[in-house]
Length: 102
Image (tube, rainbow, N blue to C red):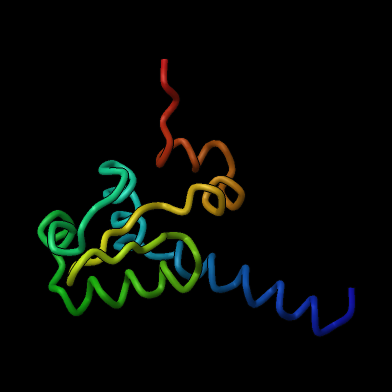
């Protein structure tokens, strides 16, 4: 692996971990996961953030590939990018978002 490739990989992980390093964004991820998919209009009331701040946090999570966005009409619906989340987080942290089913 050359230096340029290594730098791109490090930048990618840095972006993901920066997005995770915020309690509001973690709360947003938890709420999105609880509902499987949630409209931004509903999420605003759930996490008690004004639309502008919520949009900022959602953009960081989306840009880090931690959430997916589906547009329907004028609304955006968000869901967890499970493949990325399960790859990034160890089992003890991942269980917060994916509790064991017993």
